[in-house]
Amino acid sequence: MELTHLTDYALRVLMYAGVHDQRRVTMREIATAYDISLEHLRKVVHQLAALGYIETSRGRGGGLWLAQAPDRIELGVVVSGFERSMDIVDCDRQPCALRGNCALKGVFEDARDAFMQRLNAYTLDDLIANACTRDQLHRIEQPLHGPSPRPADPH
Figure 1: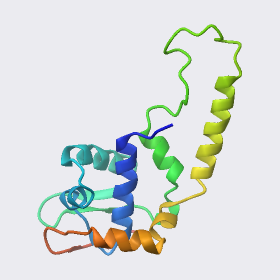
Figure 2 (figure 1 turned 180 degrees about the horizontal axis):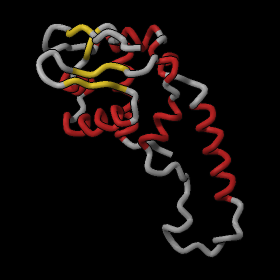
Figure 3 (figure 1 turned 120 degrees about the horizontal axis):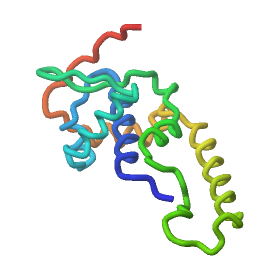
């Protein structure tokens, strides 16, 4: 099983925003840091905002920031929000002589469910609390403009 690039980018955006939680970060900054297409990143940021993981603001001093505490963002839930299908095998894609009488699909579904359960045991906080990860995220930081302060937490 391989996750899509958009899922990978979504997790990277959350990690970057989580490590830089003292300020707003820009899409251009993230695109430069990870060497990702700005157009792909726009799609990811839009979906992350729609799913409630980040908040965004436009204009001068705009950017994005986490809308939830990192310890509340379960990685499996993020993955599920970005993947169109979590099926490991598609029995309908091509004719199969075993259709309806094969245990393989059930085994794959069980494995997928175990994978997602294990993935949900981790949160964004688990990723960004790792010292090596934090250090690397700070090393790739390349703000184009001075940091904009993060807005006050409305909660």
